[in-house]
Structures are given as C-alpha cells and as structure tokens.
Image 1 (spheres, one colour):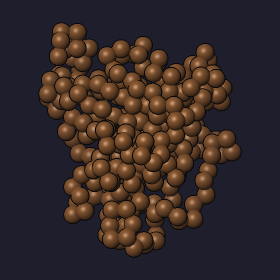
Image 2 (cartoon, helix red, strand yellow):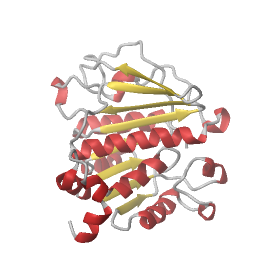
Image 3 (spheres, helix red, strand yellow):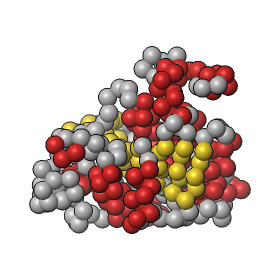
Length: 266
C-alpha cells in the first residue's frame, strides 16, 4: 500500500484482526453484487469505502422515483439512468480507488457462471427467487461464498452460504434452506411496502459478512439465518442444517419443512 492508502484505511489497519495484511486482501479482492437497489446500495457503499479493489455491480433496471426512498446509492438526478451507471458514479465519488464494473443486465446462464467464477465473494441482493437459486447453484458449482439478504415490510433475513469445503462440508446452501419449487408467494414492495432503514440494516450486515470472509477474520454466519423484526427491533438466530438430500449440494432428493423466504426489495 502507498501512503495515501495507509491513511485512508488507517482505522481498519488499527484493528489487529485486519491490520495491513487484511487490508491488502481487500484491495486485491473482487466482489460480485447482484442487484443495485435497496440491499445492493448500502452493501456496495461499504464494500467500496472499505477498500475492495474490484466491485462488479449487476442490475438491468433503471432508477425510478419510487426507488429513492431506500436505494441510497442513487439521487434525484439519477432517475431514468441505469442503476449500475448511477451506482458506479456514486461509488467513484466515495472511493475512486475502487474499480467498479457495471453490468447492465440480469445475470443468467453462462454470463452468471463466469462472473461468479471470477469473484472472491458473491452478494445476492436480487429481487426474485429464480435469480436467487441460479446464483446459489453457480456459487456451489464454483465453490464461492454467498452472502444472501432479503427485506419486505418490516422483516429482514440475512445469511451466509459457504460451500468451499465441498460435499463433505456441513455448511448448507440456499437450496437447503429454501428448496426451489416450494409453494412460496412472491411478494413485491410495490404491493407490500418496505420500511426504508430496514434495507440499510440488512445490506450493511451483508457487507460486514463479505468483508470478514475476504479478510479471514471473525466467525462467518454460515449455518445460521438471522431474522430481523424491524417493528420490535429484535433479532432471532436460527441454525440451518445442511440437507444431505439437497438437489444442489447433496444427493438430489428434496425434503420439506423450511422457513418462509423473503424476496429482496428493489
């Protein structure tokens, strides 16, 4: 690191769990954030300001006036612009050292696989279950840790799914918790609403978990699901077992009896 970087990241470097080695890991890291909306906004902001070297921001949508209540990456002048371009410019103002690669598309198929394979950590800040499951399959296939968040109304969920230990690792994947094809209502904020600070809380937790994974400090949330009741401001932690019959990371026979997933609010 040069002198300017030592000064910029000095408050990280003072932490013995991070130090210069940990900060250098962040500077060398590549993170994929899928979704530049309610959760992707705070997550991307803290990843960029913390010193992540390359941030890939993927979202095919444009900024709408209704987004500005919670999507803090964007401004009034951003309405009508691609979210990834608005986000790139905002992050450049915060930390020009962070290289932001905007992908104005909904990642899928080989394109999704290529971006997941190139990333050190993946953040799922998407807004639909099909994308969530596609991201999870790619992360399992390429052995990448996945930080998943969701928020609707006053309720939030966040967890880490880390399959880097392979099929003999006891850590679950997203499909273990929320099997694809189960009868789940797809709730959208246009109908259900969302409490603005809730997306900031969940997105910040996602950023914190991603930074810990990159640095290699602390204890990962892998194997746990955090549930937030924003009205009572109470957290609840649930242990998530790995499903040995999971269709994605197990033998392939699906089982039932999972908590209800929440979609990410955009």
